Length: 231
Image 1 (tube, rainbow, N blue to C red):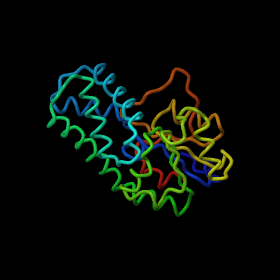
Image 2: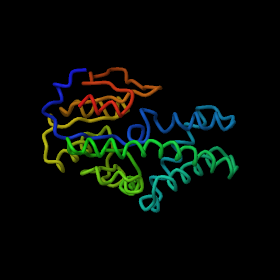
Image 3: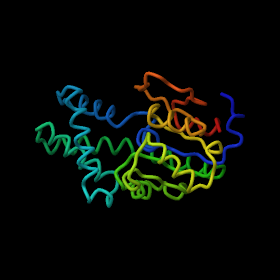
């Protein structure tokens, strides 16, 4: 990979879900695996429907912006089970705890990675989330490395809307060509940020989703830790 193309960049903007809390794995894919590993015999179509139902309910829940990741995920799984008409509190707790345990393993390593990157770049986060991203970062010990945090649940628009990327650039007071966007979603992260003129690094996970017409990215990684040598 050619590091020269990033030479003029002054800021790194990160997605959160699937990027900071995993190496390219969408939340839905993680739940597919958790249901299967937990011996819960639901079709993926049913799980997907329940997942997006839980997403919608959490977005509408006025209490969610006040809580951290673990209580958020417990609520999310509760609403998933509710949509599936499945009432097993122990299984519900097991799925939520396993999801959070894995995310917290990534947070442990992200603390040092973001702290290192902060010595060389201005760091920001642009995420489709529930209004509580600041609390999640504070709980994880990551907030001190992040200068700008744009949470769709707080600003009222979400990726791939270009306004969410523009807002981050405005707060950094940087033109797009001086920033790099790193994320796992090609459609929501890579394409809109590239169209605005940002450099792009795609965190390609084990189950990548590609839109029909793709625009090129500047680099591809499979682990976020690769940024230490890439940029």
